[in-house]
Image (cartoon, rainbow, N blue to C red; front, top):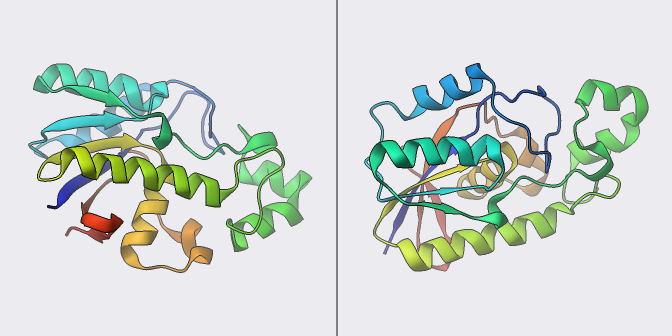
Length: 191
C-alpha cells in the first residue's frame, strides 16, 4: 500500500538563516505565519509526524490540537548535524572556510563539515524513519513537519537526481510538498 506523505518545512527561526542543524531555536512570528499559511485548505491528514526540534514540534503540537490528531515525534527526522558549521551562514563560511564549503556544495556526500554528520549517515537514518512510517502508516495521509535537509534528501530521491545535486533542491521556509511512498522505499512526487 501507498503512504501519502506531505512534507512541511519549518518557518523562519529566531536566530536567522544559516546552517541551523541541531540547534534548537524557536520560530519567529513570521515563521509561525509561514507554517500556518502553508496548511490552510490542505489535508485531511490521519496523523502528524514531526522532528523533535522546537521549530517543528511546537507547530505540530498546535496543529495536532486544532485538528484533534496525534503527534508523533521522530528523532531520526531531525536536520543534518553540521558540526563546527552549526549556526554559521554560507557568507561567513566563505570568509573562513571557502574551500571546504565549495567541496560540500559540489558533493555533500563526499565532504563532511568538520565534526559534522556524514550525509550518507544522514540519508540512512532518514530513509530508515521513512521505511518505519510506511510500515506503520501505509494507506494513510501523514503530514511530516521537518527541515530543509530532510526534505531535499527525500525530494532528490523522488526526482531521481544524482547525489551531487542534493543541495540544488529548493525548499523555502514553510514550503509544502507531497510524496507517495511505495513499498521497498520507492518515492514519487505527488503533484
